[in-house]
Image 1 (cartoon, one colour):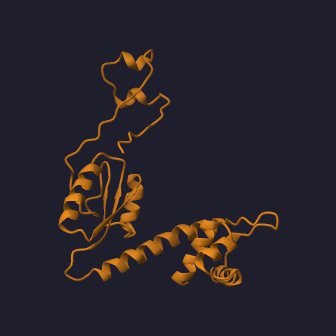
Image 2 (tube, rainbow, N blue to C red):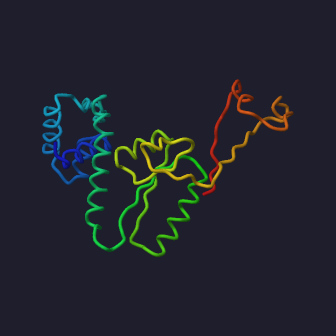
Image 3 (tube, rainbow, N blue to C red):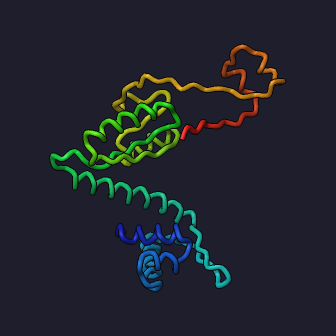
Length: 203
């Protein structure tokens, strides 16, 4: 399976149309269709559900959705590898990929990145956000260089340092709520309560 064909497949998945994907790739429609069909034959699975004449919209099969996720990861890793090799000389430059949870410690990392950028402007940062499972999966696959997670991490598997930050959480409630009568709340006070969790946006 060629990387080029993976890019073709992702274009079709993104555009949900062979015609529009062919235009974006500057290919003829028959050429693109042939490449996708050859990929399906190679894998022995149908990847696309082609629309009828009344609806040309293309959807992905379950196998197609799996391939889209893996193709995105593969191409991202290829790009990261190319950048690392091309910047492997004495010049300090390149791309740094960071995965992080929703934590205030991101401010610390951003400040450090900004200071480092002043010294080495050839460094570019890419930040992806998700929960701890997402960050660790990206780290295991080599798609990020390091991650910031809340809570415990496996010190036998990862090198880690503790950041001097604590996240502060608050609870909003109606004035007539029984919880409003308490001076402080414990986690068990919320176990039976319907909750809507919201993140503050300081941007």
